[in-house]
Amino acid sequence: MKGGGGFYGLKMKQLSLFFIVFVCASIVVWNWEKTPHLTTLHDQELHFFPDEVEGKHATRVEDEGLALVPPSLSTNTNSNSFNTPHDEHPQKKHHENTSHLVGKSISEGKERSETVKQQLIASVTSQTTESTVTDDTPMTKVETQACNFGKGKWVPADNRPLYSGFGCKQWLSGMWACRLTQRTDFGYEKLKWQPKDCKMDDFTGVKFLKRMQDKTLAFVGDSLGRQQFQSLMCMVTGGEEMPNVEDVGKEYGLAKAHGSARPDGWAYRFPATNTTILYYWSASLCDIEPVDPTGETTDYAMHLDRPPAFLKHFLDRIDVLVLNTGHHWNRGKLNANRWVMHVGGKPNTNRRIADIGGAKNFTIHSVVRWVNSELPKHPGLKVFLRSISPRHFFNGEWNTGGTCDSTTPGSLEVVQDESIDPIAAGAVKGTDVKLLDITGLSLVREEGHISRYSIRAAPGMQDCLHWCLPGVPDTWNELLFAQI
Ligand SMILES: *[C@@H]1O[C@H](CO)[C@@H](O)[C@H](O)[C@H]1NC(C)=O
Ligand SMILES: *[C@@H]1O[C@H](CO)[C@@H](O)[C@H](O)[C@H]1NC(C)=O
Ligand SMILES: *[C@@H]1O[C@H](CO)[C@@H](O)[C@H](O)[C@H]1NC(C)=O
Image (tube, rainbow, N blue to C red; front, side, top):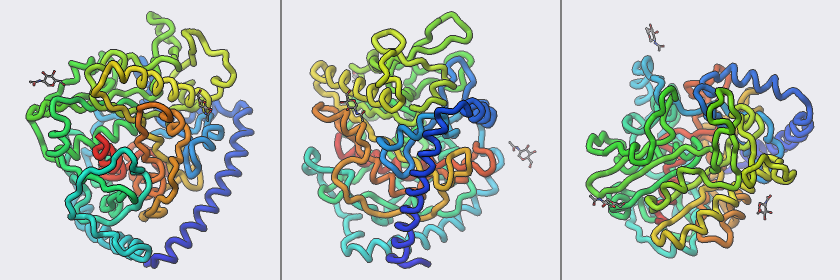
């Protein structure tokens, strides 16, 4: 067992080493981007994950360029096709043959998680003495406005997770339920975020539903947004079956289109409080429409300066909106999806925007400005831009053997005041859109990803982008709950 100090010393050395390697790799990649190797890489990627380009829209490819560097640094290095393969296909039955593993996971998982927890407690108490005090103390919401929820520390907590990874089958995709895989360490489920300078209202489903009486909360974004959506559904229900929760997808046009693998989103209503929680899939947060609506192999205009049509259409029925994007902004994905950047209704000619990082920044600024301009018309509406969810591919990328198989966090504390996602922070500045800043607190949680237990990845490939549920995205929802 590593002690607190040794653990951190080692980690810091590793981190610096990874950083150096990353910077070198970035330079190589940056040069490589100018060479025509990309098509090869791209083909390979599609070969591995043919189901990603199925259907009319071919839009379910996932990724982003943030490893251990802030997004601003990573956009250049990752603007080619280093795509993360893992994405959601809930219709697939992944667990037909996994039942025999579950028993094993229960017993081994408990033991292991106790051990890891002991380690964590040791490392936390070596730094601070009041780390576990707050767990059972009832909290009240104070000074949510001035408070920086992104600064604080992770503390071990007996009352976590808020739902079981064996349960919540009604909402939780099997591929994200790490309890159903062969993973045996579950210490990552037992950490609770404690903001440094503010008290955070403890989440309960009852309190959430009361606060959201007759209201609708909408997540609009990529698969990381969908993770947050599933997490919230599980948190509100405690992971229990709730047959009376209504599927109201049809009210939002979220029926599965003929021939597509899944609908563009989901919407569920809790009848007791008339509360609706929905998710709409918009990987880019901009409007996407076929250039030639009748053509079989049409390109898609990606209108960087227009919000997703769904948002325009349904904004007046949303009370709390959580936006996110980031992991689809790279050449490989744009090409795979046949997305062509448009500005002002025409193919983009602005060189500054043509760069992927510039386009992403431009789009995020555009959608935030647009929704901010809508706020006066929607007095009750609260809008959050969720900062980027960090990826943790060490020693390689998703397709070159990159791994994230640590079973302990990189650190437990976030000390910086500013968000380390400058694009998101810059976009909300001067607006009434709030930043849901989860980047720093997630960046130290490298052990919380699906990792090698990804069901879909080929042998040797790991998912260091998506998170195990229950897990880190639950905390994003606790931060959200504290601010609504
Ligand atoms: C499940 O296991 C059975 C028997 O071991 C096998 O015949 C079947 O193909 C497996 N199904 C899947 C989806 O792997
Ligand atoms: C449910 O809430 C919506 C507003 O979100 C309201 O328009 C509707 O009347 C409510 N339904 C009931 C049955 O109270
Ligand atoms: C992002 O866009 C905004 C508005 O167009 C601009 O002011 C800012 O400098 C840009 N930031 C980056 C990192 O490109």
